Length: 168
Image 1 (tube, helix red, strand yellow):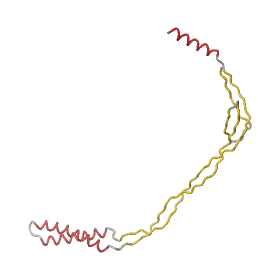
Image 2 (cartoon, one colour; image 1 turned 45 degrees about the vertical axis):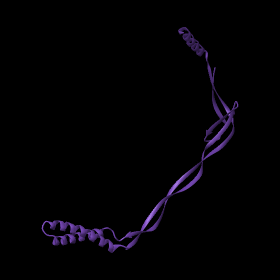
Image 3 (cartoon, helix red, strand yellow; image 1 turned 90 degrees about the horizontal axis):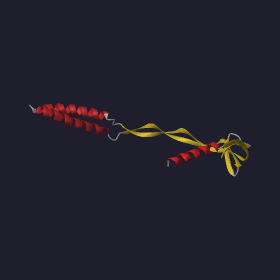
Image 4 (tube, one colour; image 1 turned 120 degrees about the vertical axis):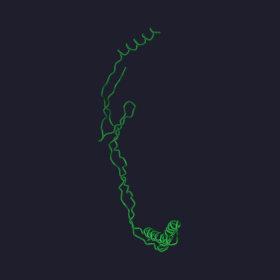
């Protein structure tokens, strides 16, 4: 088995010593040369704006808080006057809580239904698209031994140069 594999290696090595290659240059005549274009699309952004009426409630929340604060203080004072002994603290706290709720509800009731409007500017970004044809070069076509050869260049060619390698 060893002798056979050594023989095969020697045979391959010796045949590669006798292998040769030839490299030469040639050229073929171009049969067709045509300009090539590519479609290029450019997108330019622009804004479209308009004025819009936006509802604004006059009940901004500040009045609610002021009403709740005044109601809480008034309820605490009344609860303090009503209670007696150890129940005085509970009556004060209870009066403050009830006064806060009543004060907030009253301030909301006074401002309900008074909606005003303000003008607000709104914008959207849109795109203007334009397509155009851009020149990219020439497509040159030639034939060599039954094969079609295509070479792209920046100018039309009369001939296409070839580098041919023959191994034997």
